[in-house]
Image (cartoon, rainbow, N blue to C red; front, top):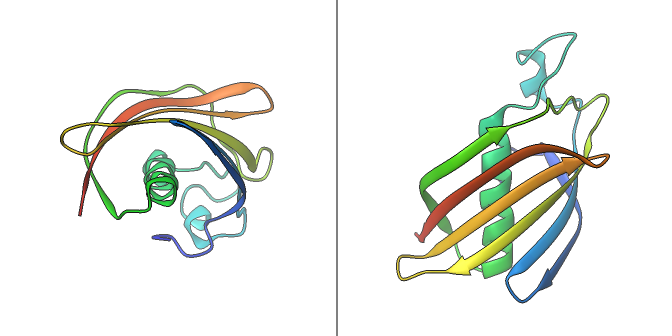
Amino acid sequence: MQLKDFYSLNDLAVTENLATAHITINKDHDIFKGHFPGNPVTPGVCMMQIIKELTEEVVGKKLMMQSSSNIKFMAIINPEKTPNLELSLEITKTDEGYRVKNITTFEDIVALKLTSNFTEK
């Protein structure tokens, strides 16, 4: 885990090329002291790191992000109000590595959509 204690993985279910993870963001993590005090917002780059780490868990390999597209931050993830997230990862093996289409939600609200391409380290 790149960001120690930033989130906890509650469960991870994998069926064929679809993985569903439930995580809880740690509202007391130091990153929220600067992003932003009194009104914490989960940084988008941290969400992208979580998606990478979950993909590594599913495929059993260390990965490096090569590109991302269709990145849409659609709702603020405030760890004090909505720390519990569901991440849906559609993982497809490619010639170069893996393509991942993600949808992250909380309380039936879509917070993030993105597509990333990863290569093996």
